[in-house]
Length: 339
Image (cartoon, rainbow, N blue to C red; front, side):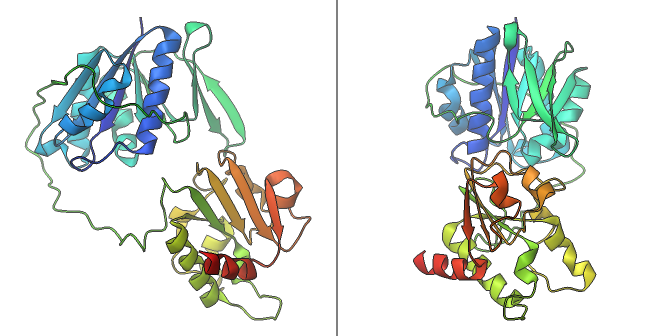
């Protein structure tokens, strides 16, 4: 019988379980039901009591935890040791984790310590005939592959949007706390530096992804380049709509070509074939001129809209659910006024 272990790290004290983690938990629950296996939940953090109360009603047979000040902050040594201890205590054959930066950093090392295998960036989990199989995209997200492994434990880091998020509450078994001894740390976390909320442009949990293309910094119909106005319009929209910002490779790279750039963009904002694969409920592409490699990365956005002056561009020909044939500057001015 398969034993499915869902691993999750506790955020700040009392913080609710993030959407990505709830989706991964839903996928783990469904996998346990499909293979007729046991579900175990593993918690890691400074204090896992509040988190145990949130996930206790998910139907897990056991809830295991590793807690202490040394497990509060993200650190490879402590996170890997905690995950390894939880996997061994649970007797896990399948391990499901949300593909957060914290878990993605240690997942491969944990699989190696356990003598198991790992697959990352999983976008679907199935169990046809009682045998688990996972789906992921390869070759710049152009080919979908289905993978099966006999090697156990099998560690799976799953992308956002893999399943409808679990909406359950508390209850269930009391957490069993494990003791994990660590060597004296050679580093210590003294704090976190992050941009203010109104300056943050990458918001994985946002309901809308706004993508800026190279057209924002090109000459406009009156012959002028309006990069400063483009910057103002885009940042104003992001602040008002609480949207996440994406960009095409061409716009990110134009700074090296001596052209006008949007200074708040970096390669971290890059989405599509050569960047990240966004998973937002809605997406709005502007000034992208139908760039095919870019649109490949939009396959997981559920509702896709675009603004373009060219009704025959790549976006208009099957890439967008709704196309606004208009000037993006005019549309965003009006949209910001409405917001």
